Length: 436
Image (cartoon, rainbow, N blue to C red; front, top):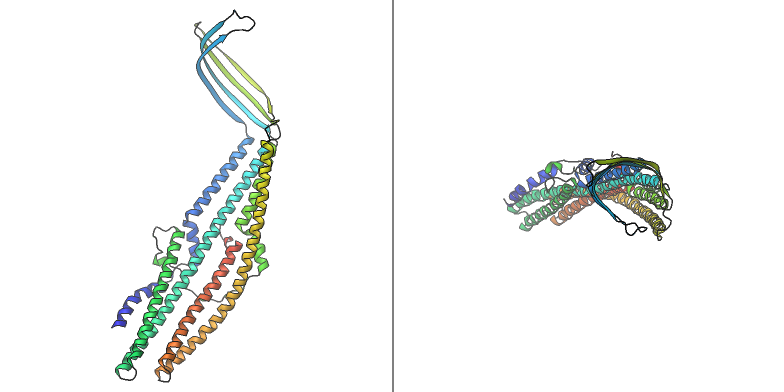
């Protein structure tokens, strides 16, 4: 009766664990569709594009409509004639249209436009970097969930095995063939299996909470219909070659490309600051109308005026401001070059570790697969011998424990190898190749 109660509690949990769900590709897709960080990156691209349009607007003329109206008091006291004093008071209004067109500014305008263009490129690469990191987080949680589901299934099989033998031992005990300790032994083993199941269930739930957050789901937990698919234990691919992985990463990894784009932005910033050392030349013109109403006369009078010409300005001395602005931009550029080199070394080191880990994980998986198959064969043989009375319960316990541990190690080694291959795709940026 006790075992039936435990089984009644455990079966609904097992049923939920057997349901297939989302693949890794589907999980990644949902994360990239729903995560707000992706939308934030898209808006930052839009902001950079707006900056580019602002920079390009400097190639067009600027037209300004202006006007004023007010009360004017005028007092004249010429120094050549101290006795003469004149004053007047009147209302005056002015309206005019002014235009200016920058012709030359030391190529700073061109540099700003190019810098903004590279800024858009950098923002797009940073958006890809956001996607890459989200895919990494989703992949790790997905594999953890898969392993948890497999461990739940292993615990279920262990539980069923021990409850079956518990019932068999109880019959033998009733018949006086075996002692009661044999029955209690299988009861203990069944409870241990149930505990392992509950721990794996918690691991699955924890991974699901992380995935729900990454997908920005309205629920705090992952719905049953969206649970990661169970492990298929397919044939594992070969380990990638280090040199090829490094070359691909340096050409495609978005954070590395973003640093290079940042250098292009700073190079144009240097040109902008150098442009401040050159004169500015602009074509200017205006047309205006002034109307004056004198208090001393009854009639109003006004006049039109216009001007077209070329205006130039050249800052000959700024206290070193422009020169030091150039030095600042150049220093930032050199700092970014060092940051690029640091990232290159980090990528190379990470990929070498991944490749080494992949080779070891593959070798371990192949051995764990053999161990599991051999252990399953041994357990089945010992079980038959135990039922025939040729093996002790202690030997059967050992065989079942070995099988359970071998199954967990087999699943863990498979997930470990799959995850390190996933990490290689993520670390090189290859995972983004299928994205729009």
